[in-house]
Length: 218
Image (cartoon, rainbow, N blue to C red):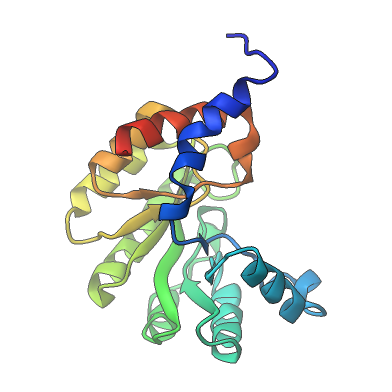
């Protein structure tokens, strides 16, 4: 399919028309990265100046879950944390991780479980281990009645099957950094899930998916 150079402008129209209705929350800010250690306060100020009201630091390991909670306590009301093991890190899961994540997630500064889910695009952890660790974290979210932040790449069918077995108790849920198809997004939205949009929105194919979703939602 071919697109005219100015077609991206038309694709973004439904997003621009509804912009003022949205509360801007950055749910994908990697504040635990060492590169932010020297100028974190200026980063937070720039975000505030740009209209970002709150920042959620999504975590991918036990270490980052602890570090994000520390930051959330230093910057209350601005930074919030999550607690979870990314599917890439699923192979690192140990028997004590459930209780350790639970201790972190009990804190009010920790607003969600995750990032967790399935990623079959990269072979960092086997699918079997990914599925096991994913379901354990869903169980944790249900136990604590916390929202859950999800990840899915190349595993739509298995991901959807697991999600459906835990509905409706696992909601609310947000699919972090969604880059899938309109059909996949529709499946998730029909289950009551939220979709997280990344900088990839400026890729024309992703913009088309987002524009279609905006038309459906509005």
